[in-house]
Image (tube, rainbow, N blue to C red; front, side):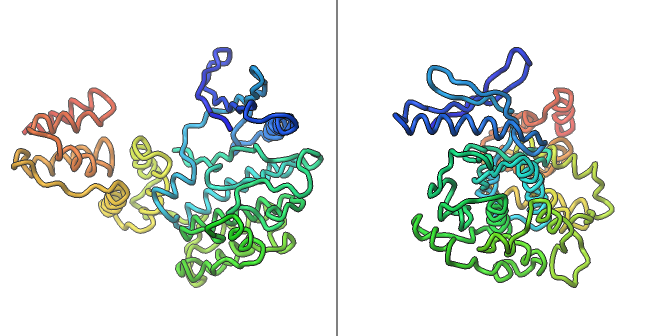
Length: 392
């Protein structure tokens, strides 16, 4: 239906995202209805000023095509991250969903129902912040645009009442959020099917597979919270986004006899916040927002800084599909390889091992090997220091 451009606003001196809709693809009453709906997106989302919501700056029509000027967000969406990394462990999953619920709580307080909460509309920034976007099918409670019987949304994440075309309220968004959380924890959607009809039947009649059976390590209370969000009847779900957020934030991380609490969990003494932030920042330059999830997950398992690096290296290696290459005719001394990896880690963090392995497949001489690795270091002075440290 359209395209999103990165643009520049010379008046305010900032990047913006321009969401342009091809209104010419529609005709007659459909076009008029869609233009009205699109303008409502601007009004609805524009009212929702919140750190976890992508800001809407302006709405206009250019040569018959409506467009939004929006906040430019440098991020990956949750759908992309799930495709790369698979399931989340409880703490980072709850950290993401809690911010989604904060965004929805703001919107619901203004009478706005999102109606399309799904991983593709959840953006994860490198600093850990979450932004909810695409209020394109949201509606104000007083809107007459969404008629009874119309079904708008993404099938696998719809609430049963939304799937039936019935009136929806804020609790419909909580159902969709529950679907996203279920997928983050298990790696699977709770309501799946080969066709829209099969998905619709599952949503309206079927029950999701018990999350405890798929993830036995999860606490009983977390499993119960997810299944409560997925209740068929809106009255059986959480009453509000704020209530669901509160219920999730202080849940046990694993079985009820464990004393580890998600919101109060702290890394081992050796892992100061500054240490973890530094590692995350270095990884984020190459991996994007998934770096935060990788670092937090590894920190809960490692008992030393060396073990933390080892876990991160293994996970990055598995995600990137890098295998240990054969030496090119012995051109690079193994001692130089080990020294280079050790020194490069000081500048780029645990991803150093992957960069070294990749460079080994192409480097034809020690000098080419050194300079290729140095290219991954940001500051020129650091690059020169690195080359000097492994010059032999």
